[in-house]
Length: 374
Image (cartoon, rainbow, N blue to C red; front, side, top):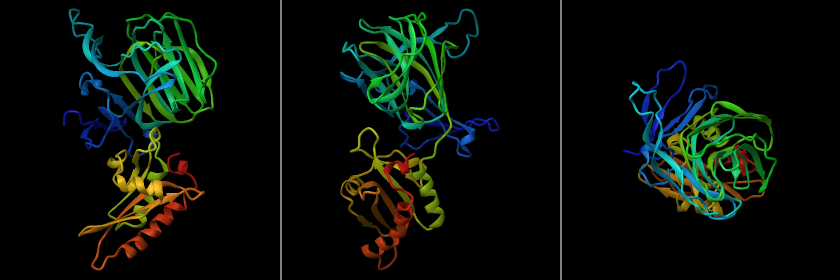
């Protein structure tokens, strides 16, 4: 498949190997995961050249902080600095390449369009990107939002070509904190490089290779999403975006692995939960087949989450039981799909009885929805 993501494994003791991801991957081109140990680190790189011109990249969510409509995020072609050094003095220093563009020119004040990468939540990480501020009558800004909890809680580092400033600030419960950073020339129509590093509560920010803001210590957010950020009618482009990070395994995945080890005859085990941005969207957050993580659930899984019902399905070779996991108040917070081998005389009652020890084992480890993901 042309737009199918590719997987790259990065480790200093291994040669780089390419492998095909399953079509279920909703990221972009490259996602490198450290399967052996979180200490090895992982990387996700966004290659917008794999996305048709005019489309919004898959795996991202367009939203807005503040007021006004969301942005218009599209892939376009633009002259950007060549990634590799030219082989001769006559070679072009820029090449046409696919870049991400925010094209909306809505002038609403206090409007902050964001395009959030939904596939991964990051704790300790380094993100780098190139950006170019193209135009804007009210504002000319571009930046990276990070450790995003939602549209009202996040950090951001942004550059302003109108104000000639490079600033960091945080938003907590919709309220903007202190602006930190220098006045410095931000040339419009020129590609710049922005880098942010988070380690624990320490935040560091670079512009064009210079650490332009003194290191910041803040404990408001320890993990969150990463996204592209602009303001008001700013038309801005982004390219060559890369995130290196320490992988985090959600507790739900650890629970699934433990259950599969204890019950090796299980055919499959999946845990579904509401989406962080759209609670009506139910997705797999943990699975005995990790390639399935992120896939949407169906009617049965949504019904289990909404009403706490139990589902049963039988085929010639297997039975499936879907049951809820509940928080301390008794409200469903997840749906567990247990797939087992069928046998002659298999009934709904004994299938549920077989699944109950598994559900109880999982239930003993959670008191609230956050116990599955944090």
